[in-house]
Image 1 (cartoon, helix red, strand yellow):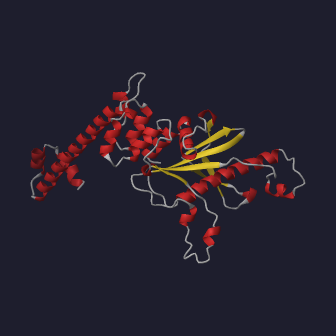
Image 2 (image 1 turned 90 degrees about the vertical axis):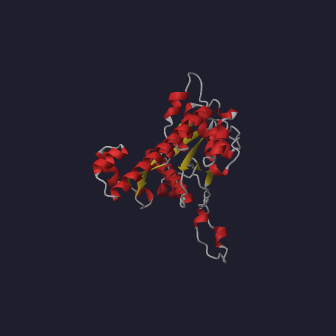
Image 3 (image 1 turned 180 degrees about the horizontal axis):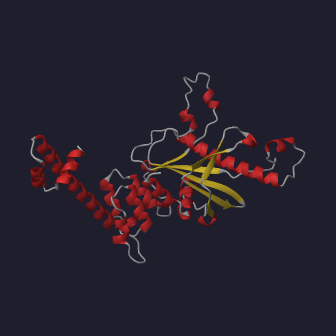
Length: 319
């Protein structure tokens, strides 16, 4: 997992934000899911040999989901999961289905083990065969794929989109068992008012990461006058600013949040100065390479460029 993905996962994994994410995407912002009903859940899945049945054995390999939580509500259990993408993945519907299947496999295996500890079977031979009782039920899984890349998502949005039905003259595509993916493309959205935490400010800003002028207008708006350090740092990382720690060091006030307008202007200045410095260094390097091509001695190149002999040698060696 890259730095940006890791920061987004850490930021959204907060229970208040997870509740807000699912409420926004599934319930149009209505507070149906409550943070106090959400708990951490095991995010890794041991990979098993594909032998099927109870004899499947672990291979020693492990697969990880980006975020997995369990929701206890109304006496039932639900699994909330999020997959985080900053690049288009043309297998994403299958990946989401595979992760969901691994979760169901884990639940079924756990139930089988529990049933074996308490072998109170009915006369139903099918229960003995599969290890699951007729009345056993499992926790449903709800997976969101969060895409925050700069480019438009041009990949499949369901398992059906990955299939080749040919001319479909027999119309068999109508009977295909599809697996739709809940895809949330931040860069396709304009209105994030369905979110009630600072996910709204976070998603709004990264949705226009290619539009510097709009970023400046947003940063000057009332919404960004007093945002939390966590949100400000997450925004800084996603937008690729050089050192988001500058925010915490310079703009955090006791009992207050960050004025994003001031932080943004200063961080953009840092980036501009960094670019200007890189431009000057590139000009110097080109001059050194040209002097070498003219046969000028190393000591003289060093004196003219203001670089040490070792620095000149390193520049020439990197050409």
